[in-house]
Length: 138
Image 1 (cartoon, rainbow, N blue to C red):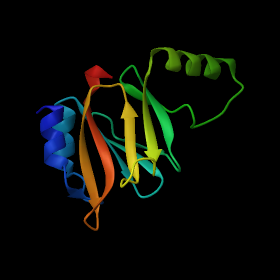
Image 2 (image 1 turned 30 degrees about the vertical axis):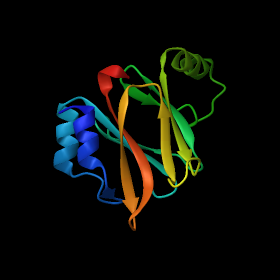
Image 3 (image 1 turned 45 degrees about the vertical axis):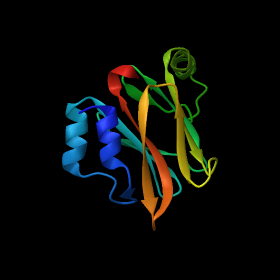
Image 4 (image 1 turned 135 degrees about the vertical axis):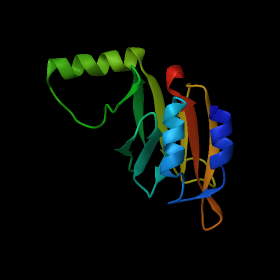
């Protein structure tokens, strides 16, 4: 399965029914990551990464070494943490979660990672434009 095939399959799904456990397992087996918004404050990751990030009013995360690095998750004066943040910005690939920045969507995402997009609907209206990308490209 390619990122384009999975995005086409997910396109038009309703909020709360974005994908099944079986589809998440298939995405993981194919090395794919699905990113979409849930409610007004969550950035969801499914497939090869299974996680959620608090994203109230938008946020940014970095993909570093095949995993999520959330620089906004905690603040620390620790020199090791500061060094990790600096490295993440140098080598990571950013995914920006945008809240209500592109009409008519509530959630959209920006990234330089090669990806395909899909729409999640709420009451027949576009709620989220999600992403599917291959983890090896991140």
